[in-house]
Length: 514
Image 1 (cartoon, rainbow, N blue to C red):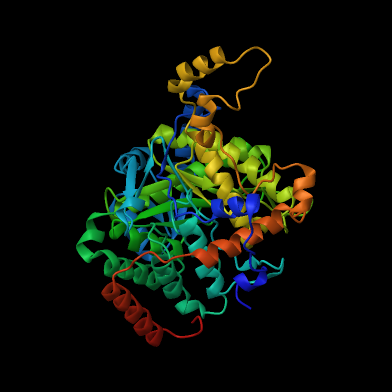
Image 2 (cartoon, rainbow, N blue to C red):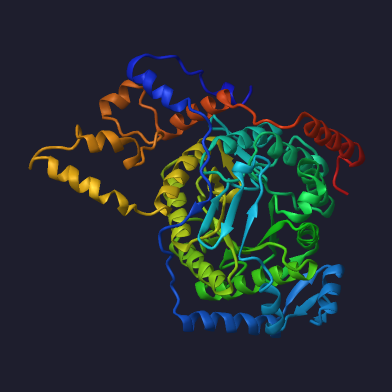
């Protein structure tokens, strides 16, 4: 059964149903990066920021942080850092000098230049969930992901206006051998969307293959001088950068490609059971990773931030959408602004197992805190369930619509429309209504956002249309999107060269991990 076979084909209808269907059959839209016009929330006073900074510097100088890779510690030694085995003690002056060379913002160039995006400062981008081994399919089954699922999610990301990247590891295609999996994921991200994409990081050669494929797509000189993708390096909290992540960082930084230097934080397990204590550790780990990137190549784009969950002290399971996560995102954002670094966090996260009230509440609470914190690169805004273990088709499109609403929130309020609105108020008699006024007729389509997957009809209308809950409405939308998907143009010679590269590397690589 294919992905879209899991939902009954939509019937052609007449009248109101036909108009409703027509609204869903529209050209692919794209929203540029969000240029925020709402303020961020800063929780700390300047003295508190200084206190966190000083505590972080003392931690890195005295306790240090481990870089478990011979090449990496050699770079630190050559730079004059105190190194004991794999433990690196980083002087605050050296650290601040290194992170000062990171660009405050950067642009990811897409193969369709109209889809290029800039992040940093007040600019934000939203991206799909990353890394799940499972999918929740259109029949409500939780199963391992496949390459067909990966392709489908790449298409959905391409068609979702507020998704600024086609994605990274949209799900793990478990039907492809691990050593060869990265080739098919990168090709899928390139072929099924013309937005920027994320690179693979689970081994040095996989990062190198990703860069090689980007050079086929854009040209070697272009990649050398432009950032075309952003990838992720997770710190093994507490206080360890391992060889796998450092190898990826070396590959991408040396190629002028951006990296997210991301402590993988389970609050209370891999950090102290303290919001401010966790902040100091996150700050130390992220800054150390970013500083390392500048040893590899000064001026390489680097993004500060974290993947964050708090841990249930009853079960040890990661939680999402808790108040402390919002607090930590706001605190991390304030520290990023202190260092003038672009920063990331994760958005629509949930521990829910199905698309239910928990999935909606947790994702919305988490994402609202992210918006108020002002993150520049928001990962995992769509489809994220079960603490990143599952990518849901239905939640993907529900979340994608929510991200359009968060985009609208971030645009702020336009006071330029006030005079026309006041004129309309003057035209309507007391006790009357505005539904038929010229002002309303001129503005009704853009005055207020009208989400299509949220049902606002009367109970009778909703019941007459099948009484579908949000999960089933979203499943129908997924099918409609995949049936109407049109691949973006890709030069045939480039496509052939990419496919030849994948085929050659598949012949060279083993089927099992060695």
